Image (cartoon, rainbow, N blue to C red):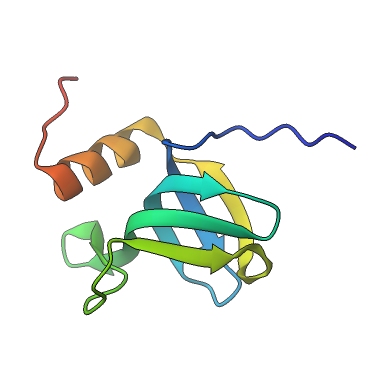
Length: 96
């Protein structure tokens, strides 16, 4: 059976892990058993509302490979969340 994915390599995606963490990240590679992501940010709630914090603070590499069996789902991120992620990780402000 062919499964159509609403995202492709290079997209900003939201990933819900089976441990409950929710990430927003850029998808670098996608194969049968793993996905490779770059600059993952965790969703957190603060006094000002929802925010983004680094998911890995002390890692040497910006790219991380996850096993798909540890993911609950992967979806393309909403445009406003994607824009906030790009601005926060690259410093490039997107024109709205």
